[in-house]
Length: 248
Image 1 (cartoon, rainbow, N blue to C red):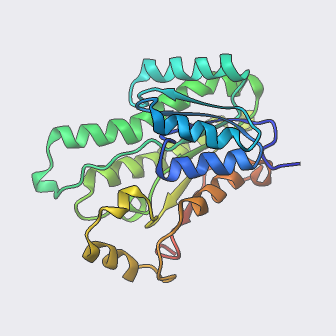
Image 2: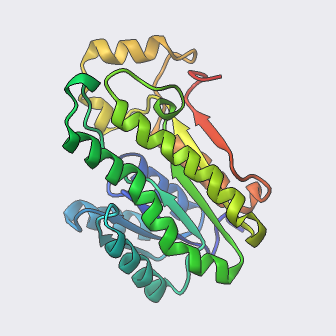
């Protein structure tokens, strides 16, 4: 039997990057996958087809995770379409980098809303269903930047640190109902987002990684599968760094 056989997972921001690889790993592990992104375009349709090729149910939705009502409607629709929700992966995220002295209120608010408020929105939306089932696994996609901070990323670091605090609090509140909540803190992962970085910046990151390479999105996906499955049934309130020993 596959690790996530028969489970229904919601994954936000899964049309590309880490989210897409997490969705593929879940489908490979037998989970039925509902994923969202800002738009349901040809890219989302292609991801949907890739997931269905694993023999599972899969459906993409256009939904703005930073909007409270839209998130509730999205989750309600997923439950109507799939019958339940067992797993939530809060992966939606953006960057608007810049030195703090030059950072605008708009840059701050946008990153906090998309990265942190989205996790609040989706967790609130799935909570009643998981409470009723007395079961569930929530995984919040944080970052090593949320653990150690980073110059030029005060907004991003604050949003990812906030996800860690949210994770630990939800784990304490919902643990008695057999609902687990954990966070993953990826380090430098090779994605579309990091591909556009200047060579000097990439070299700076790699110097800081004892394993001397960037991570792959599927390596983050593997940890997500572990945290979503019954293999981690007594793991909750934890932050797992997936960073090649950048943080120890």
